[in-house]
Image (cartoon, rainbow, N blue to C red; front, side, top):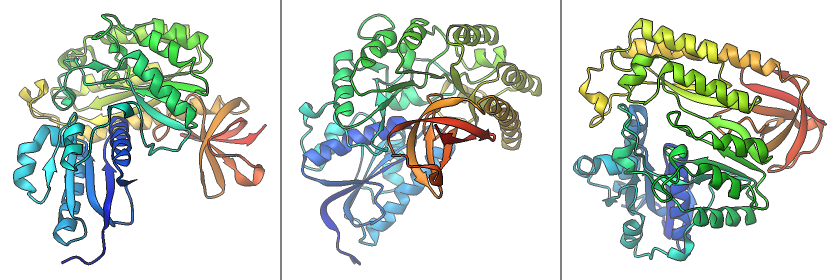
Length: 436
């Protein structure tokens, strides 16, 4: 029995997982709006007739969060609080048959490339003229900017090719059109994302073409920062650094997941690179762009990782002194190459190892942040929280990196604007400053 009146044609889109999913939800929402749906993102009102859940299926924790969310809305449907529940995204792509059996309350499941089919189910048309259009769920001054879908890499631990398919680059002219449209809406920062940024262009231009893309995007009027996420180290196209050094609006920032610091584990992971080659690459990047901020991601507890190999990774982090670092515990994913190996590192040990790395990184981050005290930086302000304006330098991406805090009492700052800030103090992950 219905306990409340649902708003007809209102759709609540719920997004789980990474920035690639946020991008996909924004595209979907733009299509729904064009089809005269009243669409909201993660509405707290719970008065939508239709709920669409865009799921993540990357690792165990993310999968569980997606399943819990589906169950929550399936129960809401049973109670008459929702009329229709649809599920899309990575988890749905990977486990559609199982999910259909386990959660029959869901009206339909769709994969990662099923947007036209999902729209058809809602009696909506896929509008080709809207390609590149999105309803932003982020603050209006920055946007995630997906330049390719899928991945051709053979990494042993990763299920993304199963869920997202083969690498497919978006043509430069389409991306330029999207960038101009975003700039016209007031977007100042583009965060380039893909499963593998550095593979861009190989499929459609028969060469790595990321440098040319960045060069052309940097000419789009209104775009003041371009930030690079998810670069692959093997075969890294060094011409990207030439564009970074010559274009003032390309941030001196690179997110390059390296996954481990032991050659033996890197080989088992099928990463196509050794510890020595990785160090050479990092040193070469820093030589070309001396003030670059490097972010990386690692995995603790890969099958067969001994204490000695973990120690190699620890020493690697100690030596390389990355500006930003995150670490996952290994997740044993079915249908991946690593699934054939025994998941032999106990969960407790995986967590202890990850914690040790983060403790080490916390100290490195603190030391690097102290060097910023007394320096002036261009800061983009994202939000207000309590008594502080909160922003970021070009060396920091939203959600994952350091933030700059300026007291509201010290002067007026507008959200979405840049300001010059002098850093007056710093802790492990935050910088405090004053308006210059």
